[in-house]
Length: 161
Image (cartoon, rainbow, N blue to C red; front, side, top):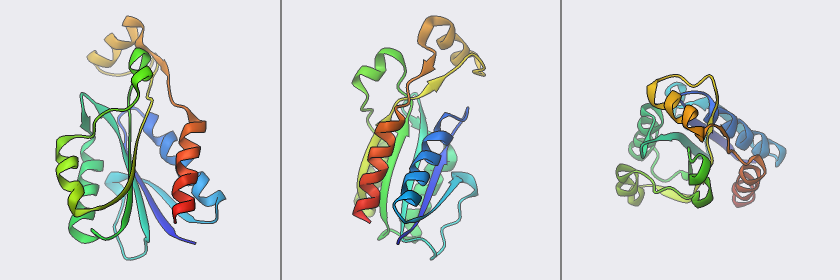
């Protein structure tokens, strides 16, 4: 049994459900998974592995998730790490893979990254902010998260651990 930190950065809550599903699958497979918003995560010696993800906005990760990965690189670079981000909507969903931000690609060499994934995002009528509201009005709203795909990815992590 591995102790796994599942940290996430979110703006409107869509990434929270992804992280919770990952944690649920890890627990179903016998691991001890702690799911926490990245800004509240503490990297202690208690974790054997980490899964960190973020909502993706204009190719950028949320600040707390970015800081968590950078802290991991400084304090626990040998820890097995899986990364995900979410965000593609509508037609973008057809070509789901989104490049990871440049800062993260540059940092990968100093981390034990075992896998990466891009998951679809969600944008509903409660979206806040001018850009999100405009996107919803332009017909790009909806829930494009594939919970079965997320569960399968998490099961792969559980098996690797």
